[in-house]
Every structure is written in C-alpha cells, then in structure tokens.
Length: 451
Ligand code: AMP
Ligand code: ZN
Image (cartoon, rainbow, N blue to C red):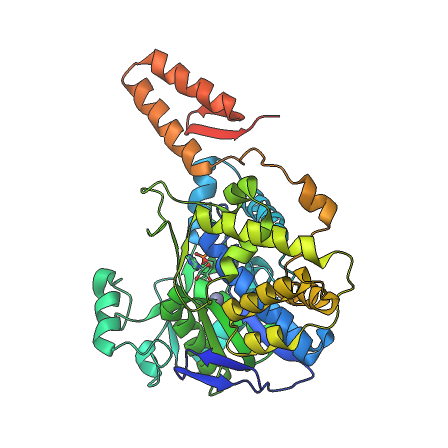
C-alpha cells in the first residue's frame, strides 16, 4: 500500500506522491522560544518525528529534508525578556537549549535543518518586497500589511466563512488597515526593541512571514508536507500560504497539510490558571522520556489526546515488558505490520497493537518476533535508550517553573506594598529554596538562578 495522509487542504486521505522522490521535503512550525515547552508542544514534535522516520524508511534516509524552525522573533519574547530583566538573546538561547535537551529525551531526531527566524530576516524582507510589487501588500504607518482581498482564494485551507474570518479580525482594527482582515508582514520597532533596517524603516517581521521565508530558503517554492498543530490552520498557515503563493506566483505552497489534534491534561484544557500546565521538563522529572513518547503515540495524531498520569504509568509498564523480551536479538528490518499501519495516515495505535502482539509471540519463545518487536519499536523511536540507562533512570528535581517564580515575586511585591515585611521575607526564602536570587532595582524586581 502507498503512504496515505489526511490532507487538511482537501479534507481527504490521499495517496502521498512526492514532487521529487529523491528529495522529499517537509516543514513543521517549531516552537516560539520564550518559555519551557509544554507537553502539548511535544505532540507535533513527536508525531512529525514519526513521519520523518517513516519517510526515511520509505525513500531512504538521505532522501528526506525535514525543516523545523525556531521562532526567536515574537512579541511574547520581547515581553518575557523585559519581565525577567535579561537580554532577548539570552532568553532565546537558553529556552532553545532547554527545548533541545527536553525533546532529545523524548527520542526525537534532529531535523535536517533548524533555521532561526533571526538568521532569515533578509529573506523575509525580500518576500515582503515582492508582495508589495505584486500589489498584494502595502506599507502604512511604518507597517506593511498583506491585503487579504487581493487574494480571491484566501481561506481555502481553513475553510472558514468570510463572515467568520471578518468577525474574528474586527475585534481590534488598526486605523492603518485597508481591510479588517489584513495582517501584519512588518512592523516598526522602538529603539529598545529588536529590529532590522528595511525599506519601511527600522522594524521586525510578523510571525507568519518567518515560516514563508524559511521554508522557501530550504525547501523551495512548493514542497511536499507542511505540518503543525490544529490551532495553526487559521490564521498562521492560512497566512503563510497566502504570502508564499502570492509572492512567488505559485498555486501551492505545500501539497499536503498535516495537523495534529490538541492535547488536554486529565480531561481539561491545559492552562496556567487551572494549575495543570505541565512542561515536558516537569514530566521528564517523573518518568523516562520513552514512556512519555509512547503515551503520546497511543492516540492517533489527529484525535484529541487526554494526557493522564495513569496513561504514562501504563506506557512505562508496556516498555518494561517489551524490554524483557527483546533481549539481545538483532533488530531486523522494520516489520511490515508496523510499516503498513504507519502508512495508513500514521496509525500509531495500530502499530503499537502489533508490537504488543510481537511481545506475546516473543514470550512464547519466538525469536523472530523479538527481533520484529525491537525493529518496529525502533521505527516509532522507542526502545532506543540502552538497557543500562533505562535501569538507572531515577526521578529527579524539577527545573525552575518560571510562572511560579513570577507569581511568587508578585505576591512578595504585594506584601511589601502592604508593609508586611514578615511575609515578604518568607516569600524571598521560599524563592531562595528554589534556587532563585532576587535583584530589587529601580525597574522593579528581576531574578536569576543562583550560582
Ligand atoms: P507554539 O509555540 O504555541 O507556536 O506551539 C508550537 C506547536 O505546538 C504548534 O504546532 C502548536 O500547534 C502545538 N501545540 C500547542 N499547544 C498544543 C496542545 N495543547 N496540543 C497539541 N499541540 C499543541
Ligand atoms: Zn509556521
């Protein structure tokens, strides 16, 4: 059977036909590096890593180019760096390094290229220039905007009604917009904000144009697969598609658009206010990365997933039992049962069921099944950690939770304002115990890690 993928663009499961089977090209929107990645962010990273591994098996490891970017220009980054009193570079470097460490523990392969937005601003300026030249964009008041009515097909990916998109856009219409739906390609920066010189003045790109420029540079005008979480369909992917097609005069930016469903924690939307906001790093302190990875793959990538502590425990038990049976058997080629399951729109639950079956056969002394278990798990990125490391795994201390630090600082400021010095000192001690040093200055309180 050919590889079949559900395509958001056509709303159908389609046979996958690469533009060039000697170079299959995929792009996944990567993290915005202002804070620790949460377990929801891990979902696209893991499921599209499985797709990357599958494509490497089907087309050859040297015939797949996977680009996953790092968004290191974004207003949330500017705000967070200010709050923490550190430089933007410092914040994005540290956050990106932590992201890499976290996902490596989840068994995620490095993409072929991992471009950073800050290294690609020239490409963005070039694309924006082309859009203006082609009358798809206009400069106004230091901004450059994409003019949505200039593209009759706008909205084809998200398939939202024009009324819906307009209603969403009307919430806050800047006076310089010709149409409420027009979106920002470039915006002005103050002298204390990151910026680049451009034909439209000192400023910085909008988020969407970053991905259009980075995918063009590494994958060309039209590539095979564009992936991300379902929340990115509109407006992010719709806008990427509009920019790329209009600037380059091509009918398609990518042929297949893949989107993973959302992750909830214990049946609830993850949010800081509900106190169930879980970072990858938190979970890695409590369970081995492979157990988290298997938990993620037990649900089909397009379904919503309910993340539970029980699910992680179950996955860990499953891995434990698989490990007892793979022994020293040499891994054979990835077994057909697993490959075929994945070729059916990445049906990981079916692939995992096949692994359980191999384990049962291996337990009855079938050495070939033990080899298939090892190789099939390998295709899913599982059973890769050496047995000695798996055995040595222990729970560890949690990394610093920045939002917890921020709310403690806020509580301490409130106590100080109320002249409750005892409480303020108590909170400072609590922060010290977490390894945080406070710096009270004229701009307010900032913090750093001790040592
Ligand atoms: P962001 O850093 O917010 O741009 O998100 C990075 C990636 O994580 C995007 O592909 C999002 O669609 C995805 N994502 C964010 N939250 C969740 C969630 N709760 N469940 C699944 N995917 C998510
Ligand atoms: Zn993107």
